[in-house]
Length: 160
Image (cartoon, rainbow, N blue to C red; front, side, top):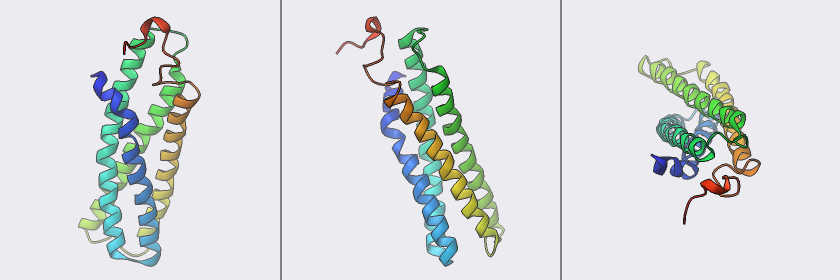
């Protein structure tokens, strides 16, 4: 399963982009009252959720692999990884709930009027959660060197 963990740095960019684009489309679509933009925003939200599932799965595998690689070393940044995991998982659940709520309103034909403005708030909150998850993930790489050969204990380095 370490193959899946190795995909994490590549996979994570898809949900980041989809969720940020969703937020922009949702905000613009609501403000200018454009049904086409709102429909595209909805499908972008769904794409973000699907790709976020992949990001969370590969992230969990990357964490397991890193824990085995560090083998209980005190250098392993447990707290930083937990913070990243918390915000990533929270982002996935948040956007999933937004999608469920939006789907319900769409089916009931109640996704109109002032209720759409709540989705601007949801979009901004979601963008903040993505920002926090990305910042924590970036800190793992650039501050702690997680996922690079720079911080792997010498006796556990992968043979190339």
